Image (cartoon, one colour):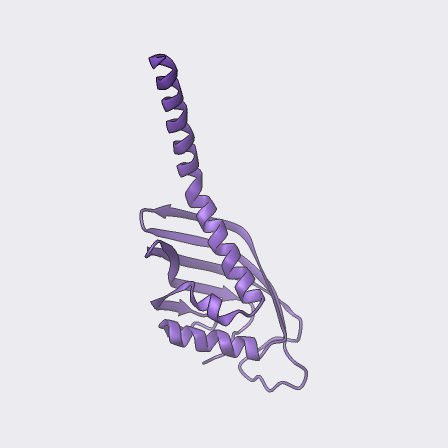
Length: 161
């Protein structure tokens, strides 16, 4: 009886260890998916819940945007100036260590600018595909992952604030 209990205990511990070793990758994949879905569906409030209050975004134009409020303004203008945004992530890679992690990969998206739109800060034609790379640094805050630093580059210039 003691032997069976010991074997069951060992199996449970091994199962828990396997789940814990997979958990960080799953957490990053879930976070990444949530960010992409919310950006593609233009859910500004939901996108902003994924950023820390003091987060920093370095946009594709090279502009450094500090604070959730300013990042919100950036995304709001991008959403207003485009009619579609189909963003995807390729070759994602990331790791978690304690309460910090990173996520990086390639981005590909198609943006459609409304016809007749006055958009001097954009140098792209309607519907052009943009490609680039991103790096997000994450922190676990109150049990939830949030972006504290994010940078991306791409083949399109994003709107200026």
